[in-house]
Amino acid sequence: MAWLHIAAPKGAIPTATSKCACGHDRSAIGRHNVLALIEAHTAHRENCPLRTSERRNAA
Image 1 (cartoon, one colour):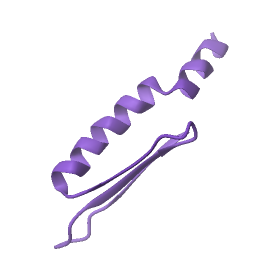
Image 2 (cartoon, helix red, strand yellow):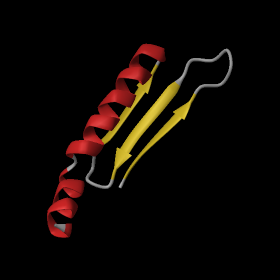
Image 3 (tube, rainbow, N blue to C red):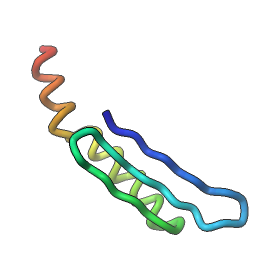
Image 4 (cartoon, rainbow, N blue to C red):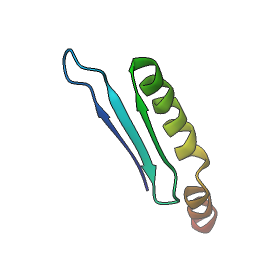
């Protein structure tokens, strides 16, 4: 299970946190870094060892 939390209050610097049950835990501060973290989070969800094993077991 992976989740992404983004906080971007009006007029403030955005922040984000990406966590997963496998131990993946990243954070970012600033627009550019938050956008990069969103992409990394999406890539992690597609390649997470826990999700990959779930897919194999389901097949």
